[in-house]
Amino acid sequence: MRFLFLILLIINFAIANPKEKVDEMLLKAWQYYEEGNYYMMLEQSKKTLNYALKHNVPKGIAEGYYYIGIAYFQMGDLDKAIKYANKAIEYSKDKSNYRWKAYAKNLLAEIMIRLKKYDEALKQYNDILKLSIENDNKRMIAVTYLDIGNVYFHKKNLKKALENFKKAYEHMQRIKIRPYYLALVNYNLGIVHYKLNNFQNVIPYLEKSLNIYQKINDEKSTVETAYFLADSFYEIGDKEKALNTLESYKNLAKKVLLYRKFKKLEKKIKSS
Image (cartoon, rainbow, N blue to C red; front, side, top):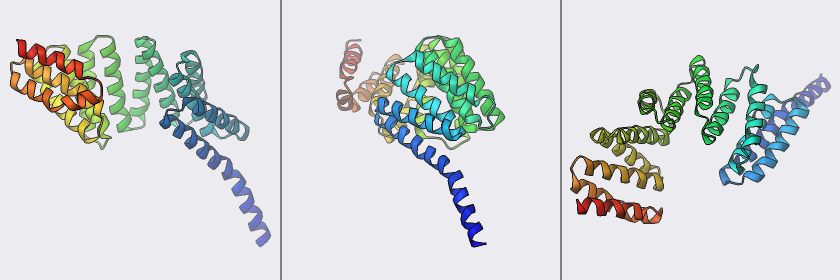
C-alpha cells in the first residue's frame, strides 16, 4: 500500500509540475514587462510557449502567444504583434477560459488603434464586451466601455465617446476597481466636455480625477489634468481659480517637463 501511495504521489507531482513550471515562467515574463525589458520578455515568453506546447499546458500556450504579441507590440513590430494576437485568439476560440480570448482580443484592438484602424478595434472591443457580459465580469464590462469610448474619441465621434464613458462611469460606481480607472474615466468625461465647450461640466469631473491622480502619485496625469481644469476655469470667467490652479501645480509641471504649457496658458489668462 505504501508503495502504491508513493507511485501515486510521483505521478501526481509529474502531472502538476508542468503547470507550476508554466506559472513560474509566465510570472518571470511579466516581471520583464513591468521592468520595460521587452526583449527579455519576448525570449522568456517564447521559452514558455515552447515548454507549454511540449507538455500540452493550455494556459502556457494561450498566454504564451499573448505575451509574445505584447512584447512585439511594445517593441514596435506590429505585424508580428498581430500574428501572435491572432494565434492567441485562434487557440483560445474553443477553450472554456473566456479571459484568454478577451485578453488576446484586447491586444489586437490596441494594435488596431495604433494603426488607426478604429472600426476593427471596435469590433474586437464589442466581442470583449459580449464575453464579459456573458460571464458577468463587472470589472471587464466597465473597462471595456471605457475602451470603446476611447475608440470613438479617436474617431472624433464625441457623442458616442461620451455615451460610452458614462456607461463605464456608472458601472465603476457599483464595483471595487483600481483608483487609476476611476481617475481615467473622470478625466475622459471631463475632456469630452472640454472638446464640446461644455466647460461648466468639465470642472467636477476633472476635480475628481485630479484628486485621485494625486493620491496614486501619477505626476504627469496630475499636471495634465490641472492644465485642462485651469483652462476650464478661465473659459467660464473665473480667472482667479484658473491662476491658482496653475500656481498650485507649477513646480510639478517643471518636474514632468510641462512647464512651458503652463506658462503659455498663464500668459493668455493674464493678458485677457
